[in-house]
Each structure stands twice: as C-alpha cells, then as structure tokens.
Length: 114
Length: 109
Image 1: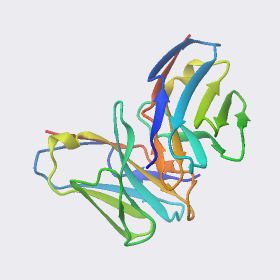
Image 2: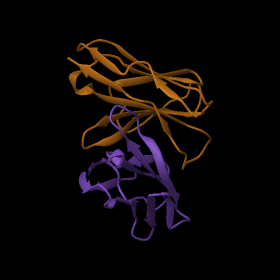
Image 3: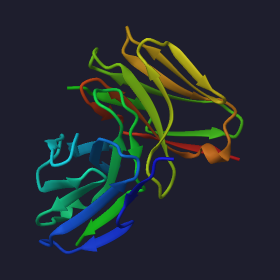
C-alpha cells in the first residue's frame, strides 16, 4: 500500500513564526502536492512538484514556499505564519506523468496560528 | 480553468436508504473523475473513479455515473450503513485536478 506520512497531526504556532510541514511518500511517486482544506471550500492547491527540485504554483501560493530536495520528501514552508493560514494541510502524491492520475493523501496536519 | 460544484453540502439518510451526491464541472477537456471519502481525522481516500470513455461504473454498493454532454457526474451509495458517514469529495481532472467543496454524509442507525 502507498503510504504518505506527514510530520505532525496537530501544530500550534505564533504569528510571525517560520513553519515547516514535512511530507514523505514511500512509493517512488514522481508527483507531490500540498493542499489546504477549509470548510465549504474543499481542497485548494498550494504548490505541486513533478520532479526533484522542481516546483509549480497552484491556486493559492501566496505566503507559502516549498522544497523538494529528494524524490520522497516535499516540504511546505510558511515564511511568516499568519492567523489566516490556520487550516488543515494535506499532502498527496501520484505516480506517472500526464493527467488523470490517482492521488494518495496523507492524514493531514491541522495548523493553528495564534 | 476547471470549476467543480458539488451538492448537497450536507446529507442525512436512514440506514439502508440510498444516498446521491452530484457534481458539475466546467472544463470539457476533463477526462478523469475520482471520488474521495474522508473520515474524521484522516486524509481523503479514493473510493471510486471514472474516466470519460465510460458512462457508469459500479463497485459493490457504490456507483458513479458520468454525463459528459451535460458535464455532470454523480456518486450513488446504496444500502447505506453508519460507517458510510464521512465527508465525500468529487474531483475533475483535465490539465489539473479540481475538487468540489465536499458533502458531509450522515447515516442514522
């Protein structure tokens, strides 16, 4: 079974702190994604990566950056956390190239910024 | 870009009844339509998907139908059970994958 793990299930940070969310997948997937999930808004794509050291902006990249130094690991960085970044963050991965690929999700990290 | 609308946002049914969730999409180039189930405290998990060359697909108590002309697709759950209670997301994938806002399904015993 594909396993996608996220470093923390719950995280509480203060406004202005730098926050790192880590995601690791164990199935040698090329593609990795970061979403945020908010009630009534579904899943919104923040950033994605199709290869090591490669990144592409999603729909809501402002206030976030990412890093993919190794194929299995995709990190989301909040340079200076703000209260409007309080949310559930979901990492996903998929195999192959092109579109129409099943995405496998991690359990999520619920981030609260106070 | 793609826009996916999902209805209803909440759905409550009695155990044993059927549940139907509907989604519409805007991008006629979309060709892959997965459905995800998210249980409390977990990430979304794929339960069924359909591609644009197929009109209907079944897997035990769940089925998905696709109408490409009308740009809508639906999830059908028959003989619902309390463990079906969860949030369900539809998605449409063309050049990128877009998700609906989710439906919270409650199955009352």
